[in-house]
Length: 403
Image (cartoon, rainbow, N blue to C red; front, side, top):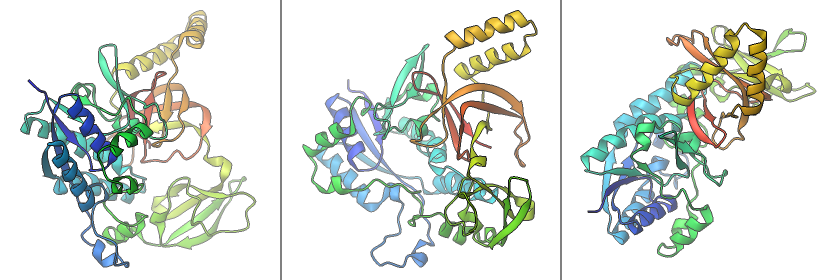
């Protein structure tokens, strides 16, 4: 008896080739196409007549392409309405984070709360045994547990987003494209798809607004954010000076350089922080933005990460100098390396130390946080974004929000 597998994605190359591979492997494929929320106010803001108000991840064009693929491959096709869930879990999160002057990652939130959470419930509804997607990543088993692992082609790797998946979820997930390169996938698609599918550009922006910036969206839905702020430049002597005033505060995040219209400085000037109670944006010249320490919230310690923390605590609590020396030797020669990624597709950084700390974060009830010390200073460590910890063999072992 064939195993039923639930495939969810758009209608373009990655999902269509995934469907073809699964059919070749004798799975009974059920394709679900998810409809997400899109800003209803968008039509008032679109100036060009050729633009359409729709969500980029579930456009009419991609829906038609998905249906066309299903007809060709004799695949069962369903459309799922996720509009309300998407608005509640992703859009409201996006606005809430901006009101706290943090830089959100809506794609991570969507994977965490919508795509994978909801699709597991739908798997039971459609009597499916497994779930599949066209994501570029691998699933690797280690010590009887399954982990997401980086894909061979690092330019297309999507393990950063899939790091939110649990070991239990990964038991039911299949990634059909794990063993193929992007060029191989395109060649496979050329066998039975027309040319228009290859002309489709991959979206690089957030899906629920059509502009190439989130600022107009915030202007429509959170106009209270657009009050006047002072831009304070801090020099090397820690003296402060107001150099600019601006009402379009949501344009700016930590590490921002673009759109800072100030002159007369030897080096580029960047945003390094905010004083929310005083409506002040803090500016500094380049070098201040490099740091070795990263603080992480949403702390759930488990599995491999717990082992690392236990070893680090054992070392810090050890009072015997000789035993401490032996521990250092062990760490130098046999300690596994761990790496961090603070953005999708960014170069990973080697971790020197991981430790538990305690801190109260804004009005959130976070008691424990993680302090990660890197071997080399890193720039653009932005509160609100997500950090993923990778093992030496590039398994995603943990993720959390930067604070």
